[in-house]
Length: 480
Image (cartoon, rainbow, N blue to C red):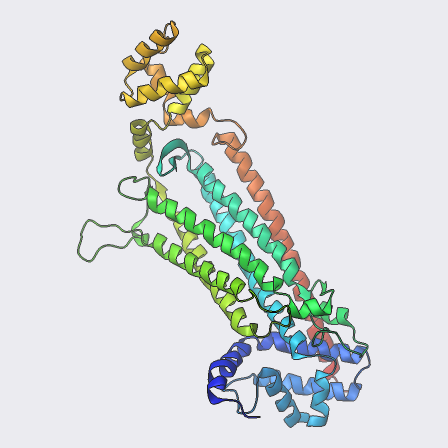
């Protein structure tokens, strides 16, 4: 049957180009299915040996060029080439007890599994680099903002570790999504399995899956294998844009806390004074673009019937893969920024002093020293800030309000208000005090190590399964 030329160009040719990139995974499925047919004694060993020989030859030839006329896809193209090699009456046995539905679903999951494992391994590298940056920034002061206004002084390590724990949480969620991805649809057939006595677990094991999808209809209709990782990656990109926006704010001329080396700065073509950290904007646009594509992947399943989802097929899969690539680029640029950004501590101290960003500690000290309520202390210190932080103002107002001598000297007030003191007294769990930051670093390292070990274990298990697949398939090729 000859299909519309336009349909072929827009749909079939595009799909065929995608499937050429999935060829290695498709051949793995073919090999596993062939070995299963042998073990289950569904097809004679002689025919299966010839099928194996043909598959090996096709594998070496690769698949190139354009999709021939009157051939729908890669599956039919491979089957046609096998027929040329061993005859149509033998080649057709490969498709016994399977459908393009379960083949497609399996290939897509193998592909997503590989991409997610690579992405997770990179995220581990990113987290480790950020942890190292935090270790090197424990004593580095920075200024944190709320509502876009100077709020309190902290350490740069404390600030970065907030994002580190967000990354670790996201990395863990992405690893957990692998459990959803790593289920094998093969053996589900079109939707209801088959009347042949197949061994679904054998195929699943050969392909490195944890187990077969437990329900054959679900194996064909579910979208969880791509929706769940998409949702996690959207969260990651959202977090990244928020941090980048904060970096943009902190590196603005008006704030001037963060500084970038020349190799991350571009100049204006007309304004000699400009130093534009446009790398931050490139991170943001990539993260936003990836976020949008992940959202499109999710939306592509909205209101589609709870039936087979091959209409989405490789088109949506390759949009997902494109978004993963863009997301990784955003993270790679971010890692470069994290490693090279510097904090202007003099600017931090100057801003903290001018804006009263450490006066919470003065209010706390008055409560501790004089036994007044925090609300009274807060009001007094607020008036002190409004008056330009003049020592005489706080001394006079305190003695008028409370009838006590204000026995803090100006030097003592200045020490209380110092940025260093503000950080040092915050010894509570999760705060910026050095010992607490070191404990956070320890926890972050342990959690990252745990996830990385799980990833390595999964990677090794998949690699061992595929090695066994190739070994057993090679044995099938040996003459008896």
